[in-house]
Each structure stands twice: as C-alpha cells, then as structure tokens.
Amino acid sequence: MRTKTRRKFAVLLLLVPVIATCVQSRTAGKNSSGKSPPASQITVPTRPATPLFKGQQGKQQSQIAFSPSTRQVTIKLQVEDPNGYFIPNIRRDNFAVFEDGVQQKRVDVEVEDAPVSLALLLEFGGRYYELNQAIGTEAAQLGQQLLEVTTSKDKIAIYKYGAKLDVLSDFGQDRDRLSSILEQLGTPEFSELNFYDAVIEALNRTRVVGGRRAIIAVSTGLDTFSKATFEQALEAAQNSGVPIYAFGLTSSVERAISNYGATAPIAHIDWAGAERKLEAIARASGGRAYDPESDLQVPAIYDDIMENLRVRYVITYISSNPALSGPPRTLRVELINPKTGGPLKVRDAEGKPVTPKLYVQETYSPSAASGN
Image (tube, rainbow, N blue to C red; front, side):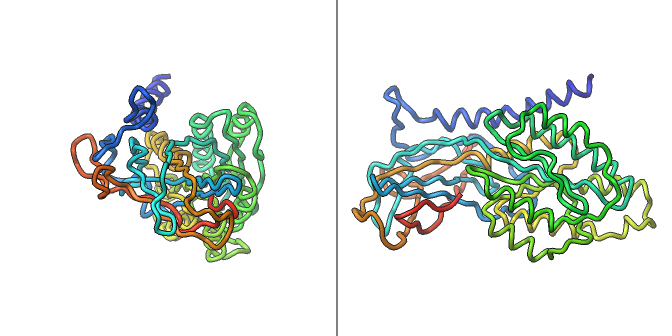
C-alpha cells in the first residue's frame, strides 16, 4: 500500500508542470475581450534541460487542409524547443504566414488538444524464461499506465507479438475490457521474436484509423526470424504516417542477464544493436524512443508522448490567392515580433533564451488536405 501511495504521489508531482503548461498555453495573453495583445517577447515555463527521449526524434508531421468553397487554409503544426518540448503562450500576432511569398492577413491561432488512437504493441515471447517473465510483468504495467493517461475519447488497441502478431483488442473496446486483457497476460511462452513483421502489420492496421494515431511499442527491438528485413520495416515506418513511440526494455534485459550470468547465451546477444534498430524505426516514423531505468520515469515519459502527439497550434486564414485549385503553393510560417517584424524572442522563466522550432511542410495543394 505504501509503494502504491508513493507512486501516485510521484505521478502527481510529474503531472503538475504539464498541467500548468497546458493551462497557460490556452489562456496566456488574452485580455478582457478574449483577444491576445501583441507581444514582442514571450516567456514560457522552464522545462528540463535534456529531452526524455533518446537520440534524435524523427521528422514531425504537419497537417494542412484547404476548403475550396471558402479558400480557408487550416494548418496544424508543432512548435517545440530544442529538446522537443511544446512551447506554449505564443500569441496570434506572433505568427506570420506566407503563401507563395505573400504574407497572409487576418490569421487566427488556437491550440488543439486532440483525442488519439493508440495501438499498444507488446513484445511477448522469446527463448529465455527469465527474460520472458520480466517482460511479461513490465508489458502489463506499461499497458495499465497507458490506460491511466488516456481518456474515454481516445481509442486503444492491444497487440502482442512473438512469432506472429496477435490482436488482443482492436480499437473501440471499453476500458474495463482493456484492463482485464492486460491483467491476464501472464508470462510469454517460448517463441521466436519477429519484431519487423509485427511492426509492419501493426502499421498497416493503425494507418487506416482516422484522426491522430500512433503506436506505443514496448520492445527490446530484437528480431530472430521475421520474413521482413530491418530495411523493409524502416521503410514501412517512414512511409506510414503513423509515429512509433518506443519503450525500450534494456533494463529488463540487464536484470535477466545478471540472473543468468555472463557466460549464458542471453549475455552474448547483440542487445545494444537491437536497441539501436528499435530507435531507428521510431525515428523514421516521426516518433521517439525511450529507455526508462525505473517505474518512476514512466509517467513523465507518457506525458511527453501525449504532449507530442496531441498538442498542435492550429492556424487558419483565407488565402489571398483567388484560385480555388491549381498547382501546389509554397508555405512558410515564422514567429515574429509584431512591432518590428523581426524574429520573436522566447525566454524561459529564468530568462534564458529558447530557440523555437516550427514543423510545417513547405507546400500544400489547394485542392485537398495533406499531412496527418
């Protein structure tokens, strides 16, 4: 009971900065009329000095839609600091949008916190009992914690894989059913680990789901007998439009190796190489890879995933181009000081400069929506 209480308290402490950030991002800078006054400089909450994910994140996707009946363009994009954290508090007047080199007028900006569809992909098999036992326990715990950070508006599917992908629950099941499935997982049986095949099949299943979607992969990255190659899995991840957020199981592997001893076969597998391939697949998809060293890090990682997946700035404007169709148009979005037209200065609560990075595609077609 004391362990559960400490864990809940730790979760609350980790959630406080995120909740504050979300509240500030929706209310900052608005006066009594509901409009955001011009700002030459914005201050954002101080965030951790290093990212929670390993290595580099993949290319972040934007979404652009054009309405031929009104010529309205809608852009959904991420604005992040160098460590991948969402930058809140940016006001409407700080965004300058250029279409085919022409600055657009009457630009409106909101913050979207979208529901998501998540496929939980669990490694559940292998050739070593100690490792299977550890992974079985960890997979169930990480799955239950995912249920805790999602809402009734979100859709969750649960897949497990060893020699093949098994669909335990497709999108649309209620929370009690999902929780029951995770509670009954047990210990994985001895099997091959066909990670690349499982990734490709999970991507194919998830890409047809509408809205914001992603895969949460709990895996060592080890592959023993897939029909698909690593290169094919990498290509599928890159072209799917579905980001993969990978929870590496390095800590479980290290514990299992310590139980077996340095001379056991499990100690001679290239676990580091498997982890690098897992990270590469996550990065190619536009997602992130994590390697939690303890259970206390998991809530913060899930917060990081949900912020990266859910939160977007939504920019709308009426295109100055009167044509309702035609060739692709170039697009550029900048953060500016509305008084001078120069670059916007962003600082954290301690006064340190923050360099924002905008993720938006360079062109869009005036006849259809694009992106994810």
